[in-house]
Length: 334
Image (cartoon, rainbow, N blue to C red; front, side, top):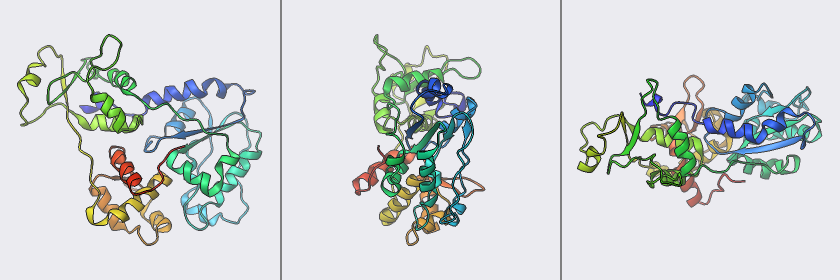
């Protein structure tokens, strides 16, 4: 039922933003510059840039498997960028592994991008971009990256309001459990009356998919046995359908192994996700499988069935970023 009110994908507005930012340029074969770079916020689990490229018929450069990254080192094999039309490289973070021979392939790709005449759009996660600039001088081969304006309370409100009508055509009212206030109600200037979305925008860092996941996790069609205040209970009289918005607490790191967990989390953010074997390659003394399992249990990580691929949970990203920053780790920023 919640899917009716906050249905995937979690990056809907960003697809439109990609089109507004790159659409006209992508269709004009003579448009300059030839090469453009976009830095994308972390935890984009749906692959928004690749979805945009496929929707508009642009070619995608296949990513190498991480198993091949070290075996390609020193072979002289270069990525093939030949062809017509715009070429999109959606996840530059998938082209390297932070270990002894793991940067050869991304350096080869950057070298080819600097030489090719083909028009290319390169996407890269913000945590990976900082690492690749330092480790492979990506800023010398690629133009200064663009990014998106963070989502503020008004943009979040407009987005969530489009999701408020369920599959049966009934428009829901989203109310806070503590006081019954309508979270999506606006003042005469179109700004949200309630502070909840401003707090959500700040907590998520303006990252739309992080905000979406936090929003979705906070929605309850029933409060169960939890008592409502008289004010909250009385506010629903005119609602066609009421959906309650509850507070979501930050997840806590394993207290006895915080240093190890931060090393694992930073490695996962830099790479966009890793398997347990890949974690062992980039963190040979700290990436033991028990830490991955513990972080999945605490809700910091999600593990994909079948592939064994681990990535940071979007709902856990705000406290993870805060903990990494407090510990002195460089944050994901341009």
